[in-house]
Length: 297
Image (cartoon, rainbow, N blue to C red):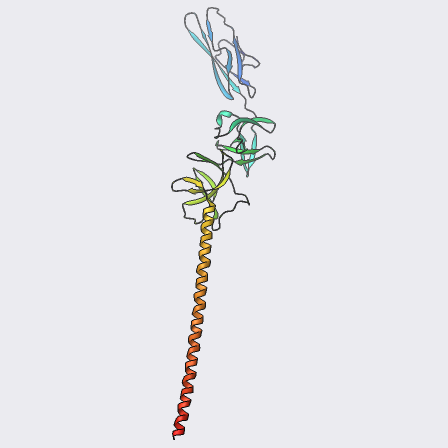
């Protein structure tokens, strides 16, 4: 005989039939296979408690006769998959990943479980970012980590970029974050990931990006150098100081220019006035000379 505890073989056992199938309920991890030998002098291998996983499992039960001849019975045990948990993000459908081994845990996170549609699924949580991450698989089989908000039942792609020893979660800056004037919003690609950035010049190799340090939970603006693929915190204080000095210099230069212009106008005014005085004096002298000539006559 040959049997699987709690399940039925298809077809029914016959010692001349060497291959069977059995369907097992979702989440089945172990099954018990039993067999009874017709010849007490034969030996048996492949029975007892067997570990199975979701999907198809091939189990061989080998009978060895006293003379060494062997006969192998194959049990194709299929563990049925649970109904997929589907979510829709921006009109695109994803399925929630249920297997922990298919996910890679990010730095500073720890394993936990989350409940989605009344079912427990593997997830990760960080005390620094306060994010709960779950795995979602798209229609092409690509798996990504998403920030899961259990309260609002929403998902947001988790963009983590590694720069040597610095790991950042890239996010959109809030209204309270001041982006320096002259920088325009754009999209750039870092490590095959498209993110929001700000550039002063579209051809510049430098960009401003906003992110959270996942090891500390602190958020800052960062300056990214696309040529060397390096990043460092953006020091707005120095830039503000430079802008203040430039502003002071502009005021000084403008004041000097205005003073020079006014001085030029005053000089022109006095030149014109002096010319008029000279003309009047010349006219008076001419009249006096005319009178003297008349008296002499």
